[in-house]
Length: 225
Image: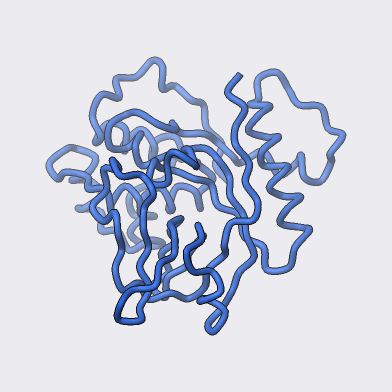
């Protein structure tokens, strides 16, 4: 799991390329690792990080999922324009699942740990449960970046039972989305953003090839006090 010292406040992170390089520095991961594990060529990652190639919304979405697997939570908005949910380390929260009476240190994000504890309770209380952290503004005004949503997976012939609901959706190509599930006129499925002002390349993903869906039945919003 990733462990890092957040030096964001002392760094100049005013461009997507600098923010992307900062993320990789936080995880201490080398470019060859990205190529080997995630099939991102070294030259491609280098071009994103030095600013010679513009980082698209779809690229940011892919990188959000990659960094989450490496123990780092970040939003697409932060990568693209510096707003939204900045990078957060989740590598040490596992200890709180095994010992619920463990005292939280002042240096740690108490609310973030509380949210993850709640998510873990939901996941352990239901069969086929999945949890997803909202990482963008596609589902505003109902869901915000940093919120957690959860549901129980439905496969194949059960997918239609989730129509017109907000769902965690797994595609056959391995991608994951949080969208509203709509049935298209041709019988296929469309994944729709709720935010009419969203800045994304595909506010509606038409004819999605779906592997499974999990309609949201659990929702945890961050206390911003």
